[in-house]
Length: 610
Image (cartoon, rainbow, N blue to C red):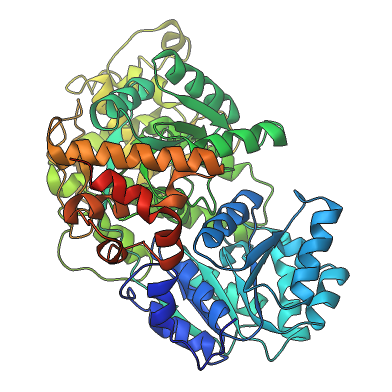
């Protein structure tokens, strides 16, 4: 291992990882850790968090100990680092006793730059005793939001990690996460005893991701149209709220000719691992999953994340959509959302056994998520504002910017809907209330004599679909609540009084009845060379396909995901600059010294073909 004085962080960035310059605050964070200080880092997915501890671990004397929550994530990161010439290993339950002993021996002999471990293994007496006998360069705690009981992905084993400060007070620690609001941030600092750590907050903006929310209207068909029209040969993630819906959606997509596999906690460990491995290693594959899937997934070429159900919070939404476009190339965050989503999530929240303080917090998070869905201005401004980041100019790369939303003044319609809830006793669901408003004499309405109430038939000016939109938006704004008994009945809240008294004017967004054809994706500086710009028979397209085929062959020979060989963005640079010598190839972003030595000649052969 090099001494801290013998090599600079920029040298390592260039020689090992093949990049010519740092991004954002990477260099400041790295220097903070190299100097022996602690850091708490908030950086969006795809922003380069891993380099913030990998480079200091290579430069500082000793071994960097990386705490990572998932076996698959460890294995992929270790495989990628080995290809870059880094001395690295992991300790987890996938290893045999003999393999564990071999790695522990290398650790004791000082042969490792980095060791990846799970939090529960790190806190075992055996592991701690080992660490006390070696030089530890640093402790990196990845996915640090898992420590927060207020967060969206709490893992109790993370709380034990305060032991690092207690037993190794002189060793620098870096905690990293992609999503943490102020409450979660404070809890990370408190539970990990990072009170003196420097806080680094990078921009949460992911300009290459296009955010789109559609009115739910036959969600499966909408999803299929989205995939076939915009991403027919791309890797993607589809999130559903229930295991049953995951299984049914994956099967249905398969029947439509889409290569899709399910993932949820109800599947056996072996099946989950097999499906995750397929997703990481294969191109053109869709994984349909609950929120049990995705944390730490390093696959850089996921071109879209689709939600068929409403996430519970903006943190969850941001974390999940952030798994798209990690390579900086264009990607989509696409969601369909409807009235039933609001009802279901409010029911789940009201029936939760959590303490009232937690339920109130979850209620606020859900309200913020609903507000994001219904907003008629730039979605990116709203999203960034939630995390305390101000952006003044509309992004030009969300649905509301690209297809400005019409609104309509609906105070009278809001009063009719709220009055109908009241006149029918606040004991009925949306479908029943719409029938009353539209004057349908069903047996049930006649049974309860609601054909005699003043709101019967006063809403015939709107269609059933339009009334559902009115009720959805009234619920999203908190004028109507779902009953606590879980039967889907609606009741008025105190916020509805000013509307009923005519003291508040209500504007509704006009839902798009049919998804418009997507306008051509705005090219960002990061993503301007995406392969879609090639014409089908161009020379560039031929070279692009040949490079991808070579990458696939090498990856299959070595049993690793293709992106570990080279990212799409690296292949795109090869197509654009067409290097013909090793020196020229070494100037391509992502081609470090080790990969140049391993793969340079094979890729140059492809590039030099007539």
